[in-house]
Image (tube, rainbow, N blue to C red; front, side, top):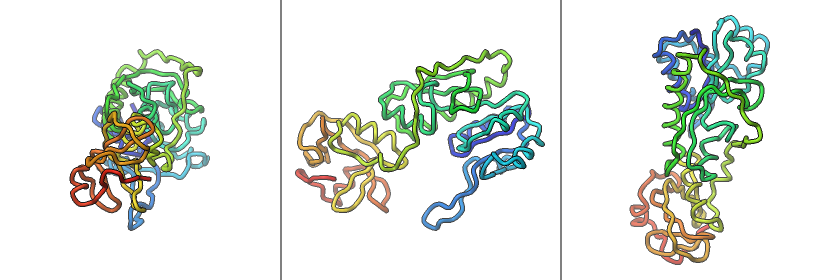
Amino acid sequence: MRIVFMGTPDFAVPTLAALDEAGHTIPAAYTQPPRKAGRGKKLQRTPVHEEAETRHIEVRHPESLRDVAEQARLAELEPDLLVVAAYGLILPQAVLDIPTKGALNVHASLLPKWRGAAPIQRAILAGDSVTGITIMQMEAGLDTGPMLATARVPIENKTAGALTEELAEIGAQLMVGTLRDLDLHQPIEQDDKEATYAKKIDKREARLDWSEGAVALERKVRAFAPFPGAWFEHEGERFKVLAAEVHGHEGIPGKVLDDELTIACGYGALRPTRIQRAGKPAMDTADLLRGYALPEGTRLA
């Protein structure tokens, strides 16, 4: 088929690659514009932008698709289908109406659960045991369209980073397989009563509140690894916790209970196993403690 691809982050790259390698014609890949990032505030192109260029696919990065002239440019490509994966821009109905076979989205949850911007992180934070991929037909609502295919994936003790990589690969293959026999898939309407909303992550959520239970805090560590990183403060310095274990010790929330940095929580205790000081590389907690004192009895903010 003749497919216009729309996506932005690393999650979207495997789907673009899989569509190209499956032999579909991709006249253009749409992605978000380059943004200033990093210490030097240099313009950085999105992962999809980089991947498309290596595959000699035209890249387009409009600020919006609400403009009639931009919609006309898209229509000139005469796509059979739009395939969307974490694009990050709203597609007006006028855009969805352009391709002859509509628009399909690769969504990182088992819809209708976790519609919205951060389904992977919200599933981990909620303590879900399973998540997955849904291939859905797009409509004007937020992730409300009929479903064509799903794949289930156990969450286990995975971080958001690891789970994102796994789901991205599964989503790519599920999309290619769905397109292979697209006419055989019967759309299934979502049950709106079962829907939950995965709101965008606010960096302020990543602070570890020691009054919470250790199980909830360990989920927060995994949900925010590698970005933005769950964190606590000590003497004005921020420490990111990239991995942690739950322990059954009890104590005053925020108090260090031993020489392994086991920290009392509202219920139970959390022991960081991988940690990062501001401006420093990540390291095992045991290595940190050899050069930075956080002895038993220390109170953490």
